[in-house]
Amino acid sequence: EPSLAAAPDRLPFSRITQEDLAFFRKILPGRAITDTDLLESSNVDWLKSVRGSSEVLLRPQTTEEVSQILKYCNSHNLAVTPQGGNTGLVGGSVPVYDEVILSTALMNNILTFDSISGILTCQAGCVLENLSLYLEERDYIMPLDLGAKGSCHIGGNVATNAGGLRLLRYGSLHGTVLGLEVVLADGQVLDCLATLRKDNTGYDLKQLFIGSEGTLGVITAVSVLCPRKPKSVNVVFLGCETFEQLLKTFQLCRGMLGEILSAYEFLDSECMQLLNMHLKLPNPISDCPFYVVIETSGSDPTHDGEKLHNFLEEAMTSSLVTDGTVATEDSKIKALWSMRERITEALTHDGFNYKYDISLPVERIYQLVTDMREHLGGRAKRVVGYGHVGDGNLHLNITSPAKDPALLAAIEPFIYEWTASCQGSISAEHGLGLKKRNYIYYSHAGPQGHSQPIQDSSR
Ligand code: FAD
Ligand code: 2HG
Ligand code: ZN
Image (cartoon, rainbow, N blue to C red; front, side):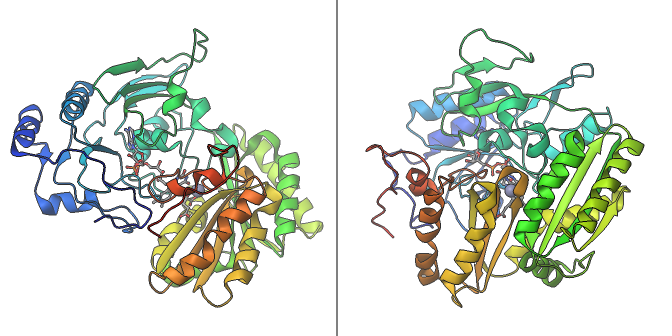
């Protein structure tokens, strides 16, 4: 039985046999896992909200092994779920039924790094944080950063087109990924692993795989254009009375910080309460309805410091912000970033999470939180808003003491209709996975040319 009402029916795929297992054990000695205890963590997602019942986890080390696995599964009618770090938040990284799990965990070699161009090529299973550490030693950084960096794989990042905390500065993976190697469902290896900034010789096939969530093939290697490590990084944590002031502060800092602005993130006071209560992280400034994390990164500490100082002075004197603190040293920078990065973790301690990842015109993003609170009245335990303001991306999370179908019926389709009415997206950066697949037509024209949900008779 699938663990989610929105799950599709099991298609007529074959069930795994002893012969299949014998084949996998032969090509992956010691790396075809069938022990149920070892399989448990790969069958359950990070949020512990969906669970599959796969009987085998395959851990290839090379592209050739991935190719052999897919070729075999294709010809034996076996369904496959590619899995990276299993940090996805939409239920796409675990099997729905008994699919074979193909994990990239052992495909974790860095292949090449060119210290002149900053182009890195690596296998898909490299953990994002390990890539960052490798690059930092060489005066470079990854163009993306997210709270899940300690576990997520670069292949998973590309498969979900992960956004994260640096998108405002370095753009999306559609721009920074220069090449991909992908194994298609029949085992054919598609080599688009270019390491060139420019290549207009026909269609840019790799773009199709960025954000394809494992539906078109398994990404086995990635080449990425990496920025230089900034010589000067500052983080400020500010408090605002209203969301309008927070937006005005954004405009002001875009103008005054210009090219050194590298992140503009927000959280509301409900998030702050969660951080205080569940993670014992104290508020670094006085209590405010809204908080902003601003990061600057540049090449000259004096120049950056001066710009930041002028911006803060203007923001304070014009009463856009009510309180704030600045960090220049590493440990304080990390501590301030925790206030933003650890909200997802804090939420998991607050009960059952209903998670929404919405793109909207930036001036509308908090209105949705306010409207949702009003709409739900006392039915939810908590309604919190945070996210990537600079990218117009709201993370709206609703908690309740336990799973609550009546609460869910009050949230959906309200939230999707609200989003569609502003031409927003129902999944800004997490993807569709299992959880959002039925709502795609709120963001895209359906077969009849107008937006509508897929009818889900099981709900
Ligand atoms: P998985 O979760 O293992 O897989 C995700 C999807 O990609 C699945 O559909 C899977 O089948 C497919 N897949 C994985 N690897 C491959 C491959 N090699 N080839 C083909 N398909 C593959 N996301 C953001 O966008 N921005 C954030 O700021 C952000 N912050 C997060 C913070 C926390 C604390 C957590 C838990 C998650 C966060 N996420 C964020 C969501 C998640 O981390 C990202 O989506 C991440 O990119 C997933 O990578 P992964 O390796 O864990 O992939
Ligand atoms: C973030 O930006 C992540 O922190 C996770 O995308 C958002 O948990 C969420 O809703
Ligand atoms: Zn996010």
